[in-house]
Length: 461
Image (tube, rainbow, N blue to C red; front, side, top):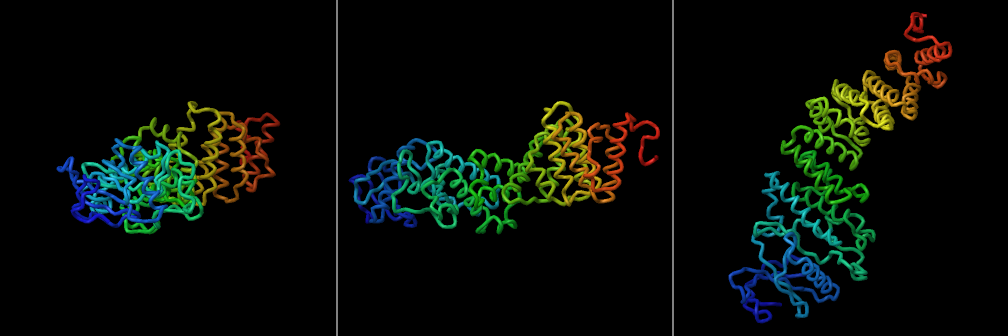
């Protein structure tokens, strides 16, 4: 269309082909007669279809709206009435992000900087109500000391009623598109759609893999957890925002790059566990061990603060993880120290009891660990006088069948002076030894006999 040596609009001298790989445009090297010292590129619409031309014009309009934004490829000049329409922007001497893949795979610190810059770029679009809809490494340009996002031809346009011409049912790049794009979701793209494509882009940069499940040999587990959640087929399970993605990614890199210290290390490990559980409903024993080691290294006050803020997702992951002997017991001691404090709200006893019930019912917990989980729940329920927590404790006690666990539960009940244990229904108890103790406690309650008085122990009567 524009031959080498052509002077476009009497101003831009075509010096040769830069790239013809774009979906709807060809890019040429040009010199601006008004500033010949600058090397520029001219992109023109190389398709005749009206819809493609409209998308090209949309790209230019959006880029002009964002003029001056350091995260978006800048436009120096545009002529949308020209045949074909074109725009001119600076030349990015290092090409797109695909050119940096070997370097980023060997230098994760640089990879982190790159990924955060990608998030910055897309965040700028989202702040203007614009979703890119075609995120991939090829659409981030590198040069002039920075990284910018480009190729906005498929983005939603702020204020547009249709967000795309009516004939477009879906768009984007196969391999990067979220599954909802194939099922009519292209026009209703949102932040989660862009987050999916960012996740796939990060995966593409770090490994030659088509899915997170194929990349476990190439990507450190904390980073893989982040990618798995970002790329979840279910958009509701992805990160809720770019800010959430950035935070989780930073914590993962804290672990991978050994930047963790103090509570930062344990919080990063905790986040990796939670992210993996939310994304895949699975746990990784190595990640759990990292968390438990980091927790054990903290001062008691810091341990209590961390234990107090642990979410239910963490306990669900913990309960599903077969751990080496002793690890879970050490955690339960830290959690008991927190539960024994009066500083937390009275309703928090329900949370503690619920969390401990997950450990109690876990097939991976030993009888000793189950008993200590029950003890923690009992102490908190009694201390805070929370009836719902007491009911959870009673249900745990009544469910016991195993003989070893029965004896350990009996010991816990005898050792903890919790008055509500006298109200356990003996007929609901599946263990004979527990049923016998509960019946005796009930009888003592009616007669007023204290269980610590001589002769009150049913096993000595």
